[in-house]
Amino acid sequence: MDPIRIAVVGLGKIARDQHLPAIAGTPAFSLAATVSPHDPGTEGIPHLSSLDELLKKGPAIDAVALCTPPQVRYGLAVQALERGIHVFLEKPPAATLSEVAALRDRADKAGVTLFASWHSRFAAGVAPARAWLAERRIEKVSIVWREDVRVWHPGQAWIWEPGGLGVFDPGINALSILTHILPRPVFLRTATLSIPENRAAPIAADLSMCDTSGAEIHMDLDWRQTGPQSWDIVVETDAGTLRLSRGGSVLTTPTGTEHNEDLEYPGLYSRFANLIRGGRSDVDMAPFRLVADAFLRGHRETVEAFHD
Ligand code: NAP
Image: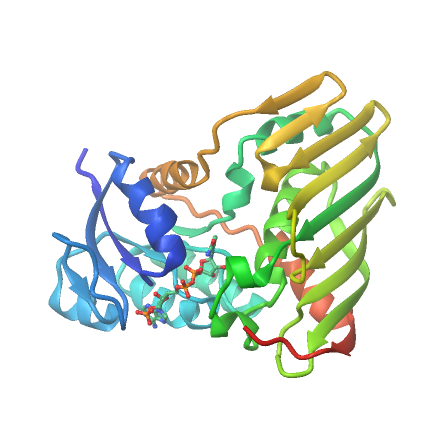
């Protein structure tokens, strides 16, 4: 079977750190081109400054991975879907829920694959955590996602703009794990969003959620963390405590700790190839809905200005 010719659009941090190596390591794909307005590209691969230019001039492609900031993702996805090109959306899948719904409809009508990816769901501990929790009664969940924005997002202006999500940019990763490992749907009760006086998006957030059987879920998100960073989810159950730490890669249950090699992006590309070959899409909006609910229902407080 011929490899799927893919273009990576938005040659920024995640494209270079994860997408290019994962594509190189997945025989189902061949990297046909890269696209970015201000980047020189990588040696030996055709590089264009816009998707428009790539679609006009070639090379021919079967799929795109959209690794841009979320605010421009919808327009790029439409351009690709209109031409029957399969689309891999980095997280979050777009800037609004209605954009994602419109993309899903368009992909279905065109018979093209749309993959709204959630990389943290492919962290090593997540699948075994989901399997372990499937048989348990969930009593309480605590999420602590605290990192230093200056270390992880230096100079990323888009992340502070409307649609950039602020601290929910990493926080949605925790929500993508939560909504995958819990056996029941989750909804938001209350939220507080802390927004710097000079920014449009929150630097911290505190969320109270629950699942449909009433189990309490608390989430503490903060970008002002210095020193040790935390990406931890603790689930208390009738059979003891499960802990997922380091963003989902380390799993501890009452029987011990597992730390397997993380293959998040190879896992995503293998899933994308399977979806394309099977003529299917995968668009789960649950993590994005919870973020939207926090913005809809959250109380906003203004906090001190943030400067990079
Ligand atoms: P980034 O470093 O700011 O890169 C974004 C890239 O998008 C830039 O290279 C920019 O190109 C390009 N771009 C902007 N508008 C474009 C357009 N209209 N057409 C083509 N390219 C365009 O951001 P990032 O950290 O890689 O994050 C990108 C996405 O991946 C975000 O949604 C983020 O949540 C997600 N993500 C990031 C990480 C991470 O660790 N950083 C992890 C997982 C997922 P120029 O620089 O050439 O202008």
